[in-house]
Image (tube, rainbow, N blue to C red; front, side, top):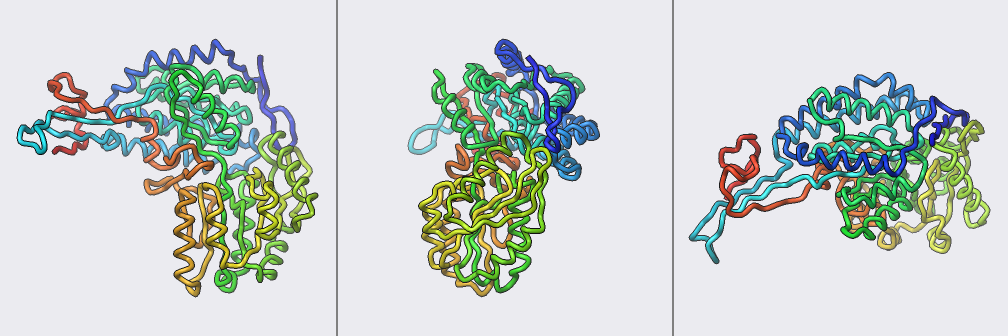
Length: 498
C-alpha cells in the first residue's frame, strides 16, 4: 500500500508515492529499537551529546531539501519553515549542552552513616535512567519543530531512549528526509540506525500498533485532544499501562482591560487579530477566547476593520479545512453571535478568517463557542471587568492565559485574576500574545487537563525528564555501580553527596 502527499495550495499530488507500513513492519521497527535500547542507554553523557550535535548538523545539512518539501506539503512560507529548521537544530544543541554536564541524571549520593538519626543509614545512590523505546507522534502544524525529530523526539533521544516515530501523513516526504538525516548522524557516531525509525501511513491502526506494543515504554504526542484521548485510552488498556505525554488543545484566553484599550487600542486590536491568524490559525497557542469590556465597541470596530484587510494561507489538509468550514458555518448560523470576516482564499485548502463576537451569558449556553476550532478564528466575549475573575474560575485547563492590562488598572483585581489564571494555565502572559513558544530552560509548554495529559513541559530542556525515571542503588560495591554513581566519577557528572 502507498499514499501521496498533497499540496495545500492547490490540492495537487506532491512527490512520489510513500510506502505505508504494515503491522509487521511497525512491530519489527519496535523490536529492533528494543534490541539496541540497553546499549544506547549506557552511552556516556559526552557520547550522547556528540550524537545530538551530529543530528543538528545533519538536519542543517539538508536544509534546502527540507524547505522544498515542507513548503510544498504544508503550504507554509519559506521563512516559517526556515525558522522551524533552526528551532529544531537549536533544540538538539540545547539538550546536548545539558546532557554533556550529566545534570539531567540528577545524581544523589548518600553514603553509609552508622550514626545517622533516627537509624543507621545504608549507602544509597540515585540517578535518572531512560525508560526504553519511546513512540513519538508527529504534529501536523509543525513539520519540523514538533514532528518526527521535534522537541518530543529530541528529548527522548537526549535521555537515552530509542525512538520509533509516526510520521504525519500531511508531510511524509519531510518526515523521510529528517529520518535520513538522523540516521546519517547515527552512522557518523558509529551507533546503530535502529535507535531511530520512522513509520508512515494513513491507516489509523498504525497508532494502535505503536501505542499497544509491549516494548513501547512511553508516548510523546502533540496534537488534538481527540487523538490524545485515543492514545491515553490505548495506554490504559494495556496489560502494563505506560505514560502518555500529550500536549493537546487549548483556548488560550486573553483578558483585556479598559486601561489597555485606552492606552494602545489600535496596536492591541491589530496584535490580537494577527496572533489569532498566525500560521492560518493553526497554532496550539492561538488566542481562541478574547474577553473585552462591554463598553469596548470602538475597539471591536478596530478589530473588524483590521480583519477585513487580511487573507490567510491554506490550511494544512483537506480534512482540517473541512472541519474548520463546517464549524464556522454552524456557529455563524446559530444567530447567537456577530460575525466578522476577512478575505476569502478560494484556492486549494483555503478558507476565510472569521471572528465571532458574543457575550459571556450566550457563550455559556453554546458549547461550540467554548471549544477549540483549529484554523483562523477566535471568539470575542464581552463582559464586565468585574466578572473576569469569576469567568476565569469557570475555564478548563489551558496552555496559556494572558492579561492585556495597563499600569492604571486596579492592582488587587489584577492579582486576583492572575492567581486564578496561574491555576488554569501552564504559562501566564502580561501584555504579550501567546503565539510563539521560546525554546528556553524556563519555558513551560503544558498545562492542566485538557490542554495536556500531564503537568510536564514539551518545550525547553526540562522536557527531557518525561522520558527518565529515578532508580536508587543501595549498598552495592563500587565496581558494580553505574559510572555516574561511582566515587571515582569517570563521567565527571554533577554529584550531590550527603
